Length: 79
Image 1: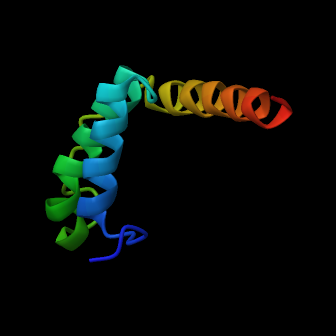
Image 2: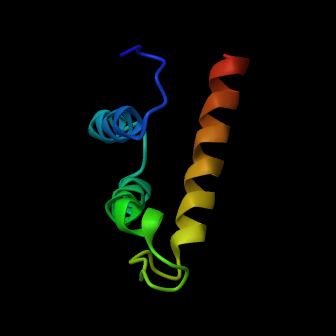
């Protein structure tokens, strides 16, 4: 499997490794992992049959992580 592979397992491993390195926020990785656990069941279920555990603040967690990463990348590019 290529290092550039975009399979879910590769992405899952990569994001959890980045968390260990401190490059990705813990709340975001927990959200990712919760959604990941629901993925298999939700993929084949009828709409409304699966309850996603992500809380009401899921969108704000994702937006916050994106803003943090954008700022970090801008600083690195401006270097």
